[in-house]
Image 1 (spheres, rainbow, N blue to C red):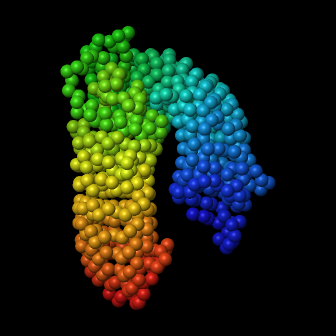
Image 2 (spheres, rainbow, N blue to C red):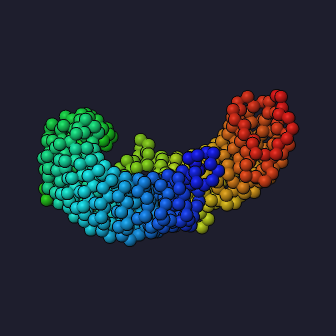
Image 3 (spheres, helix red, strand yellow):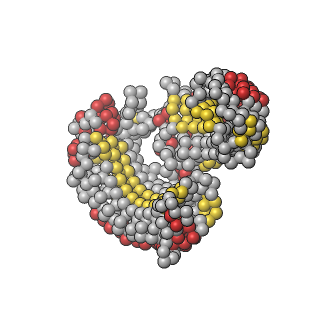
Length: 631
């Protein structure tokens, strides 16, 4: 998608905006690209570009670009970025292959407002030169391998509103200079994933951060009490405020200054807190209104009780009484995740089967390293590594582990997994075959992830074991074949857009008579659609846009009485449109436009007199001839 400042200008000199995201581009961006004189916005995200060509900025007249989006590519170098024009305000480089130290040259972009460097492989210390980026408003360097301590020079960024440097290997105390970041609204320094860093020391008061509404310090080793004047000068007491202090070494109770926040969500579970003031238990709007329902338990489970999240957030998720024995005074600690007593007689076989499957899914697809959202998963499996089993979970925590509260998991009333929805979560790799052994699994949404189920044909593995599976989304995944999909006898919806099948649809596929919706856009399909299409007797929607299917459109489509949407556009179909399409009495959309085809469909336009439900017909860019029928 290309826009020009002057639509009457036929030359490249008018190009102001280029959006070629998710287009399978690869290689190097030409250096000359960054010399287009009117270029303002560039979006090349979601491709496989290895070199951004920033050396092209080293010219007397670089493009006056203001926004560059190169997220989700394979870029390995930022050479030349220091020559970017002063007009550049936003630079997106999330999820590339940048390694080594963060180049100090990036810090020369003093006019930059937003910088996104998350999910790369940067290592070493954070450059002190970041303090020179005086115009910066948002800085994201989440999920790299940065080490050392936070540089005090960050405190010079007094215009910064969002600072996210979580899930690295950073250590040490928070510099006192960060009290000078007076416009900060969000601060993320949590380390909840395995093999990440550990901040320690006292939690600062942050009295000067009057606009701070989100602070995440979970999974570190902060100790002592929360300061009594914490956020004491806040100007946002009437707004929703989130404080994440879970899994540290904090003691004491909550400071009295927090009472002035009307809508506070504070997670202090997994610490050494021994008291909650009754005034806090009367703040009905706190914890998303759960304090109104559950009192103090909504903040922390009382002493001598526990559950998997350390507090109560639903009627069913009560804090469970423990019988001990406790050690080292832990019986007085609030917000514990598990009881210490022996559960040898507990029947947990069914739960451990599901937990093992989810554990395998987490580690097989790079959960600790790559997942964007691992809420619940990361905490549950923090002490484990790839190849571990349920038996390796310390202290038998699996007994109180509530996997139904994991991100993307939905269970029924009996705690059986019904749905896994982890789309666009940066999952990577081969999924263990036991995923289809969840006995009541109905929905599996893994679209937008680089995953597959079989290492031999990159197909669907033992999908036949999921006897209740009705919905499967593997859009934009690593699936490369239809292998074993014909075993999915209960499947109703299948979404495979942007998978690179590069082959024909196997005849066995047409035996899936439960299938109602099938989308495979830009899948590399070729060959002809056989008469066996009539076997999909319950089909309502078929979208095969943008493939290389050829031959005649089979007349057997006319036997699909429930068909509502038929989109065969941008393929290479030839011949006449079968009049039997008119027997699809539920048809609403019929599209076979073929702008990219050499010849296209030919012959007359059928009358289709019986299609009373039809709303859209698009047969453009074919070779149809004759008069349009009167009826």
